[in-house]
Length: 169
Image 1 (cartoon, rainbow, N blue to C red):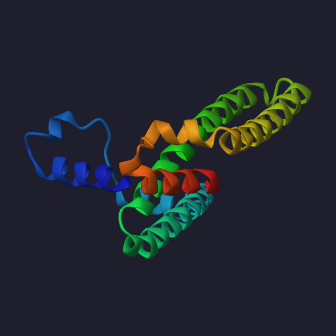
Image 2 (cartoon, rainbow, N blue to C red; image 1 turned 180 degrees about the horizontal axis):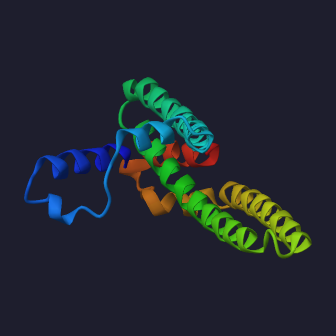
C-alpha cells in the first residue's frame, strides 16, 4: 500500500490535470518524520514479525512440495487438501479471535475485568476448537478425505496419501 500511495502521489503531482484533485499535499519532511517515528517502527516490527512467521510456514510447504514432487502427483494432491482443510479451520478460529479482539479493544479502558474474561474465554475457546478439530480429523479421516477425492479403485493410492496428509495436518 505504501508503494501504491507513493506511485499515486508521484503520478498525480506530475500531471497538471490531476493537481486540482489533490486532497492533501505531500512533503518530503513529513515522510522523513514518519519514517523516523517510533510508531512507524513499532508497526514495521510487528508487520515484519507476522510476515516472517507466515513465510516460514510457506517455506516449509515449498520444501515439502519440492521433496514430494518426485513421488508423483499424489503427495501434491494430499498437500493441497491438507492446506485447504487447515485454512478452513484457521479461518474459523481467526474470525473468532478477531471478533474477540474488537470487543476487547472497545472494553479495554471501560471494564478491565470484563476484558480479561473475554480474552481468557477466547484463548480457551480457540484451544478447545483446535483440540476438537484435531480429534475429529483423526476419528473421521475417511469422510473428510472424501470431500477432496473419491476412494474408488482408480484413486486408492491418491486417497491414502491425501488421508495421511490430512491426518498429519
